[in-house]
Length: 109
Length: 197
Image (tube, each protein chain N blue to C red):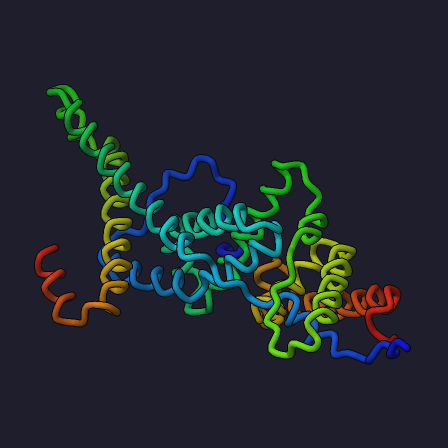
């Protein structure tokens, strides 16, 4: 003999059915790798840009209207790089302690 | 005033420029905090919107990349308010793009979602799993906005105000949306015999 359906708290049921899902470890790795690639691409762009400079281009750079590209590349490279260093440093902090982190930061600087 | 509620997620011309300037280090620390605090939110939302882990990972990655590109402006314009609605709105827009690009019906996504079970009460595992399947099936019958509102509320624990900001609606309209979503779902489940009316 089957039991009649019980009244249920639908909101509790929804909270159970839609409970948050922990992302796999690889997800954070992917995000950090993507930011890293962004920084590398910006650095490459800067390098290429510097290699390709000729005297006429150097002269043209005296015009501020031509400064947008290198500034943008430097900005994204620096920003992404700093974010990655922060993320990496904080991740290591959990394992290595403050002393090791201080040494790491000194080495980076 | 809510420009950050309209992130240019489909902006193909974005140059990828991240935050810059004298407050860059502080800005990066803030972004890192946002990332750590809401990675699970973005991933959960993506999973329940897309229906599989592989694409949910892609969506999560893209969401944070977009967020990083526009973080400085978002933080400036948020005036200290929480940025989770903005982050979820980015994921929401990317999920919409995903469904459009794949020419899939968004409502089909939850068909394949496996209920996440935590069987503390082992006697009711089977019954609970079946009921959750019925809930998922009921969610599938809801319109996109109703289903999204329920995901934000019950998976992410967002307040009415946060959901309103994420969906670009007023607080009042969001309250009504959630109420009607629950009511419709209740009717769906009652019709399926999953709960008493």
